Amino acid sequence: MSKPDELLVDLAALVESGRSNQMSLTVVTGGAVITGRLAPEAVWSRRVSEVLDDSDHLGAFSAVFTRRADRDGPPTHLHFHVARILQGTVGIPETGGMYRVAIEDVDAWTVGDFSYH
Image (cartoon, rainbow, N blue to C red; front, side):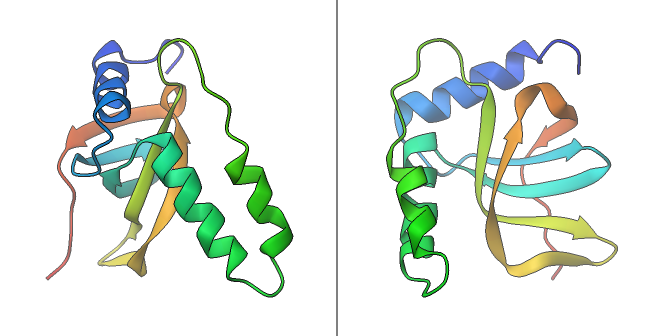
């Protein structure tokens, strides 16, 4: 999108202000379909930092995610956790991953997530 969808920005701002991780969303970006729950950036960053910190090879990168500065203005990114990239009849990874998507890059979206049962 050349101009971010104001409704999507408002949803992201509500997630940021409420410190909630219960908003499910599915987006299309760059031809990929990503589905999962939104998290506030601080919660998302902390979780990514924890995962990296537990790694023998990637622990040094953990600090990048703990140095998040307070931001002014509307959110610019969606922070997904327990999320999957949908391809055919599978979601990758099956257990869910952590994705950060620029709101301006979202081509389409819908409330709710998709899963294959």
